[in-house]
View 1: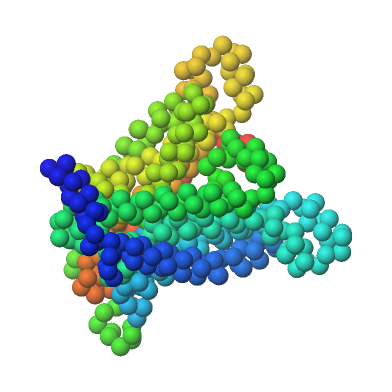
View 2 (view 1 turned 30 degrees about the horizontal axis):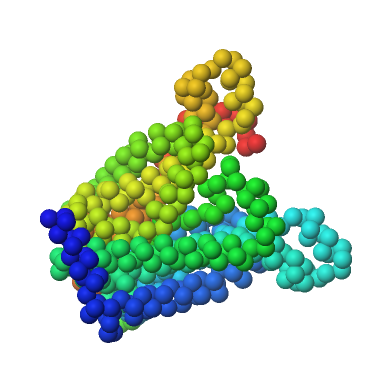
Length: 246
Length: 223
């Protein structure tokens, strides 16, 4: 029976009909990525300025932690169906909004931590060289915080790509509906194929972002970061706020 | 919109009173899935972390694999499991155990690695063997980190249970989704608030248990 399902999944994945047309896998994947990009952008527009401001002033740490913790306890499904039951309506919009809201905490906490961790001496040197607060922020503090900010954006992006499939539950697009429709119609081959596609997309995205982050980090910083952060802080260096897609 | 149809409020005590049977069923399902998942995950994660700690060469791959698995969305995991384990409780439980386990392995390992090298040396100087050192020195010292891991795993599991709705076993998620399908706002909101309440209560209980289990951290303050 299970062999049968795996075979069905392969048949489904090999069916040219599933790779073309408006419901084809390429279109659905593109849709998925566009929805994800919009959600991450929305979250970044909100979280980056707040995180930079709070981290620069070194205040609001307790509030950011409290927000991250609360958001961890709130199920994505809850926010999704609440949005879908209001004027926001069914489909892509509530999903993108819910995904964006859950992407705020990782970006915010990492940005905050990045700016907070900038060496006090470095900051004072910048002031001593005659830089204004804003200039020091733009030329010294933000560049030094960039690796952590980047890590936050990366975590948020993966989390969003993993959350978007829930759109299938409220009539939205992307790759999620393949799974939901398959489950509803008990075509488990399709369910398995959809699951593999979503999981594959997330793993590829994670790999691409990891490589991108490595390329963007200047060489000297790569090694020191590793040495400085290895060992004891393995788990906290890139704090993931919630299991993806919860 | 909201004011246009007053018959569909977000909060309704009538709903809770009239449907308490349904709500308590979902609540029990939610809590039992969470407790079971975290317990099983802990039982698997502890030896795994200890093993990875004993052989530092394994630590990198174990953490790396945990990170990769953590990237797989819960919906996709349930979809991949469902064809094999069927529609129902087992599928949800396996998924929940997997995610909770990843969080726990990471935190236990970090806790064990964070034990002060001097403390370890002192114990070795006193003639402690490997097992005795693990049980009486390393694990107690790693306890704060283990408690943090348990709290994190529990809170995320509470939220994750709701995704079980796709295979018909989502605890309170079941109520949320049904409320959405029948446009019954009180049902959605009640289930959401109960979810938050479970997470909060569980987190508090574990935090208190953690404090009671590590009296020495209080005596010296946070240093």
